[in-house]
Length: 466
Ligand SMILES: C[S@@+](CC[C@H](N)C(=O)[O-])C[C@H]1O[C@@H](n2cnc3c(N)ncnc32)[C@H](O)[C@@H]1O
Image (cartoon, rainbow, N blue to C red; front, side, top):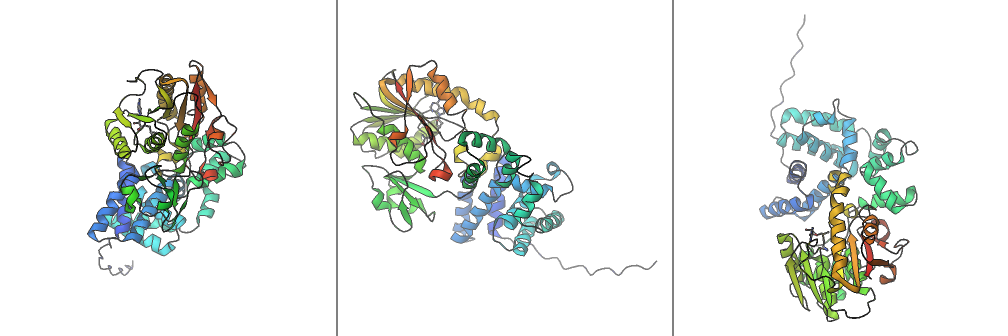
């Protein structure tokens, strides 16, 4: 038997450390392993790397895109990776899966050339997983690189005609139950829900609020900033920008706030009222974005705001947001379901209740994969309790705003309808409170949408105490 000549061993080469991929990997691990939030773990990693001189602003933008893009499309990349490995995904180590998803995103979701995406990911794998597992990563990525995203979606998603929700879920990277819930809430046909799902996958603009009486939208209109679409106080930073570099933001005269949240505060403030208009309550105020706008609006008409928040650390954020408010206000740590205030003592009340956040999926890339349908039932008693007490806090004729950053009917209309069965109050048409804002729904409550309004999918019902 002739022996085959042995290949000369290649000299060992140390893997190259690429700070952008390492940061992205570290953030993905934290999200996966510790249930961290990408928007909280990533900024300090980027800041430290910049301070060390490892990365510049462009690198930071790339690392952010890699983390957000990978997390947003996690479910879709899982399907594609599963088609390229010969064992069930649950048998692949989570750190290996994170590297594979990061590679899949570079190959299928960015303009990074395929050879660069594969080699950068394999180098990362050599650093964080070792050479043996890097060879596995290399083999899987080469299979993924054999087709583009469209080609893969044809292979891994069922045809729309066979299973519309599953198809849309895989193509637009949303869990099936969320596709179903959003479609129910939105109504309409395939084009409507696809526009919404696509908007959920787009990077949201940074929007500022100029707090009335403290700053003007005009003074924030510098550089790439443009006026908001609907709120007179909103300014959009079209290129993202760094809000912290803006003086008015640092001084608390302006803040970062989605235009949808501004509209909720504005609609409550615009609701007509007979009688006094002196005492306003925000019953779920943390971290204080709406409270700061309400406080400024209240000050403009000589009213005072009480901002209540159950979590002490979040109450401190409310106090910070309200510092410098031009009119009287008070911040209290209090449970809105066991109120410390006298019933019937407020003219306007907002309860922006804890919810699943299905209307803010643009901002929290991992949220859609973490939420479970059971979460709805978990929030339900608290939402009903907070709305009930908000109504009791309002005087007869007073107005209560019930808001969620979720369009899910179980958290919106169902809560309002249930509470109205035992409280003396009636819904009032909220749509005229936002003149000029189109497509608010059939009323009397209003629903904003990312694809129609460019805002989070905020819901608001206005109720008058009878
Ligand atoms: C959706 S957030 C409110 C966001 C806020 N309106 C803003 O614009 O910044 C809901 C808040 O309600 C608080 N919360 C939860 N249960 C509460 C309770 N029983 N009483 C008062 N606040 C509560 C949460 O801690 C959270 O800060």
